[in-house]
Image (cartoon, rainbow, N blue to C red):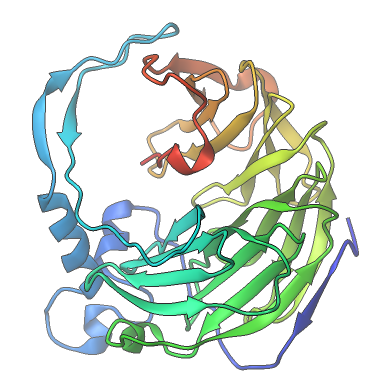
Length: 344
C-alpha cells in the first residue's frame, strides 16, 4: 500500500461517466451522455448500428461439439467469420490493440513507437499518437471505459505508462477524420517493461503489470491527470504478463511466467485465488461478461491449452474455484495474449 510511484500531469477539466452497464446488449444500444433520448428522436445510436452490422457479417455453420478432458460442454453453433478490413498503417510489429467498450474505436500500438486510432465504421485512421514521451517501444494499450472525452493508457518498454485524452468529445470524434489527443499524465514506478494495462469497470483504477514481477494499482482522478499508487502487489515469482479487471466488480486477475493465474480483491488487494494447472507461462485471461449465477474465467498458456475456471460467487476462496473444462487441443504452439480473444 502507499506511495509506489508518481504521475506528471497537466490540468484540464472533465467529469466521470456513470458506467454501470452489465449487459452486453445494453452496451450496444447507448453510450453514456449520448443516448438517443439526449440527442432527440428515436433513431438508434451509432454504436448500435455498427455492432448490428458486424453481426450480419457472420454466418452460422453446422453445430459442432466441444470436448473437454474435464467436462463435456453442450453443442454450440460455430460462427463463420470473414475478414472485413485490413489496416496497414504501422511500419513495424503491432504489439497490442484495444477496442472501445461502447464506440466503434480501435487503438493499436507498434514497435514503430506509435499508437494508431481508427473509426471502425468508416474504416479510417483518425489519429496517430507519436511523442517523445516514450524512449522505447509502445507495448500495450487500453481504452478507458468512462469519461466525457475518450482517453487511453499506453504502457511502454521504457517502464512508464502514458495517459492520453481526445480533444473532441464522443459525438464529435465519430464525425472527424483527424483528431488531436493530448498527453495528460506520465506514470512512473515500475522498474522494467510494462506488459499490460487495464482499467476497472468504472474507470477509477488503472492496473499495470511488468517484467519486474509486480502489479501496481493506480487510483485515477476524473481528469486523468493525477494517479496515486494505492497498492504494489508482489505475489508472482516471475514476469507478470497480463492483468484483467472483472467487468463489474473491483476484482483483478493476473497471469504470469510462474505458471499461475491469481485473483485479487479490493480493499487490501490480497490474493483470494491461485489458479494453478498450466505447464508454462499463462499469457492472458478474461472474465465472462454476463451474470449467469456463476463466475467464469478463461486463460491460455504455453502448454497450448485454453482453460475455463468456475466459481459460485465472487470474490471467493481458492478451494472453491474449479477447473470446469479444457477446450479442444487445436493449437500447435503457445496461445499468446493478443491471439487469445475475448470471453463473452
